[in-house]
Image 1 (tube, rainbow, N blue to C red):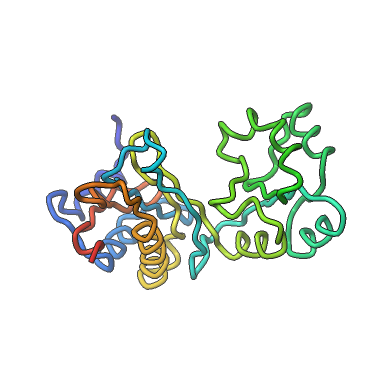
Image 2 (cartoon, rainbow, N blue to C red):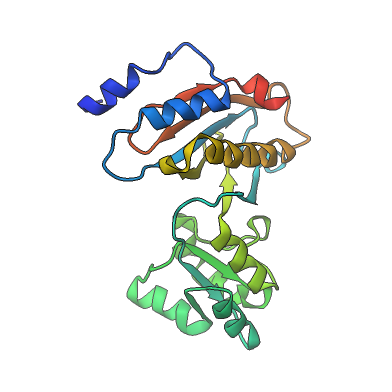
Length: 231
């Protein structure tokens, strides 16, 4: 794989054989960030579970104390008073069947998160094949299917993120921007890790946190000590 000059220079800062504490790790991530834009910082957590089994799924949502630094566009499927409640809470779009039709007929995706009230899931289900592959299907575990659209929208706008396993049993989550600094990134990271540890399935055997690393968009990964994080 081709690596640019900046990446190679950044990689020299990091001891690949060492497992770092969170504070050290984020300090290195910030120092290794060479891009001309404010890079997103992501956490990558490999878990000792098998996502093929329903009783070993790890999925949920958590509000990061310092937000993600990203402006999130929210679409809400609702009807009646809930439409205005969603818009008042900061939703970018709110409505019913007309939005589903727009997505279906115009391939319209000017949004990042979809929220729905339970009574709208019949309509949302019709476009599930379109929303699902893009990771946009509302889900009760993520708090995106909720009768309280006001709280759902406010949480998302405040920095709520969803975490879920991919097919290789790894969770990938944005936890802020390089400009946040070590303290804010550490706070967001600890909040995410606490939620993931709390979500440990009863069926999970052996070491739960297999490996944990953090990296900026264009930078090299920094490995953390999973044993310390699990304490």
